[in-house]
Length: 230
Image (tube, helix red, strand yellow):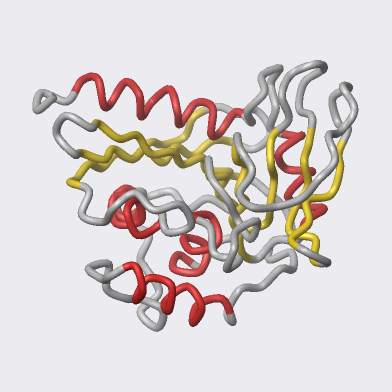
């Protein structure tokens, strides 16, 4: 079982205004420095939503870092109790994600999230927020940017440009496959920008998305489809 930090634990039953205040408070604890020596196990997390029954589904999958062989998967589902508000999606998805982590027996050395890290208006995307609460290095690898400025990278795999929020670099736009759309990589917690990019590229297996989040996405889609309550 992976437990939430008792010091940082907070209520999820809050108003949007209170949610912003929580993000601002937690922001001071973010560490953008490499918090690991080597990677043996890597996790991937993703969330799916079903509008018909207002249900959220989360999957956390853990893999061997070198081979991408699956080691463990954990699942959770629950109702969405917070509205869909860009910039506050963690308050919608966070509880079910944490429930999935509580089911894990294998602690990953780093977790990739299909979402933002510090490339967020208050530097508190899903990857950052979860990294703080779980005290695990995290990286956000999103399919779309959120209020940042950047130039389009070259068309070759590995081409990259900086993601900026004003004068601050908050991540990197990375081409993970020749000629396909780039991904938007930002450190979450206990990791720096350069290491975040290296991990995303190292875990690619010929697809746009890194393998941990790609497989987590496939698993959560299957999980949602199999739900008898649908």
